[in-house]
Image (tube, rainbow, N blue to C red):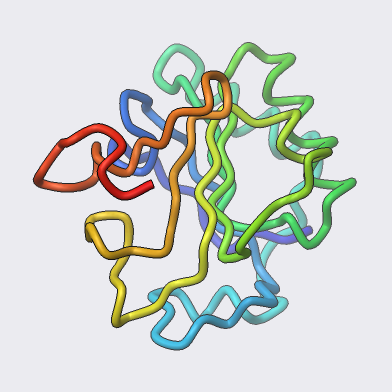
Length: 155
């Protein structure tokens, strides 16, 4: 599994400071995608060692590690998720798929599913097809991305 970039984000996972890995070779290829460069095989191999190095680099600063993609390499992603959890961090996956396997979900705290559809908008839109779920309690958190802030409004 390769990644093209890492960033730190306060907005991708509500209430968390997340280290984001942008995974290459996305098979979803959503029309209007904001990151079509992730469709290619370019990037650096995300090894266990590299993951631990990046986590260590931000030790005490981050609370969550979020993967933008990677579910298409399920077993490898699960191995990385286990490392993240063993290091004491929460886990998140942003997927353009409609659903993700239960095997992957067992290792996640948060999951965003759904392809980008311009006419429906992203998580900020009340008409979105995308869902952001806290898997620890099963609650939909879409309202935290929207101006209405009405819990459960779009899920």
